[in-house]
Structures are given as C-alpha cells and as structure tokens.
Length: 88
Image (cartoon, rainbow, N blue to C red; front, side, top):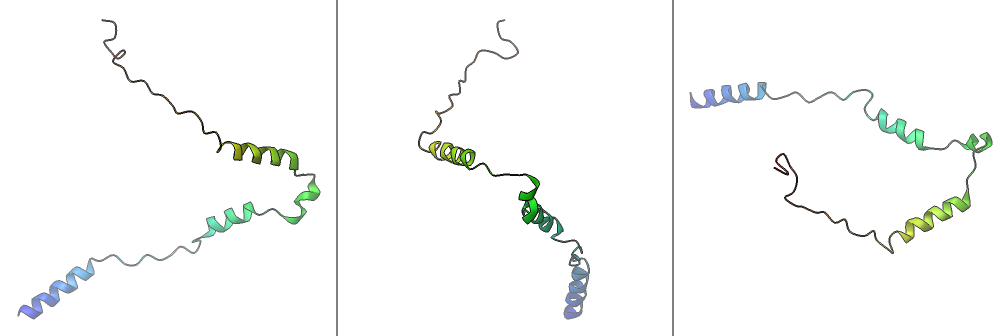
C-alpha cells in the first residue's frame, strides 16, 4: 500500500514537470546577422571609402594619454539647503 501510494505520488509530481522547450529554428540567427554586418566586404574600398591613418594615430595617442593623466575626481556636495520647505 505504501509503495503504491509513493508510486502514484511520483507519477503525479512528474506529470507537472515542464517539458523541455523546443529550440526555435532561428536560434542564433541574430548573432550570425550581427557578425555578418561587422565584416567588411572586399569591394568596400572600391566605393570610395578610405582609411585616414593620421586621424587613427591621433585618436589612439589621445586614448593612451588618457590613462597617464586620469580625470579629476568628481566632488559631490550634500547639504541641507533646498527641498520643499527651503527658505521658510
């Protein structure tokens, strides 16, 4: 009797378990699309696009210099002035 009740309870509990989801047939399509959009086609240079090496070098130099002299810390002031009853 005890074994039969436990078996019945086990079947009832497993009947409520969620079924494994079926993967969408487009699973991963967004990642593949984004990767394809980032790739530059071989004929892109023929369309007049050019690479400005001097501008790239300047941008890279500024980027590297930004780590040598960090920005000054932000100072936040917290006071009691202000609010709904200020000045009353």
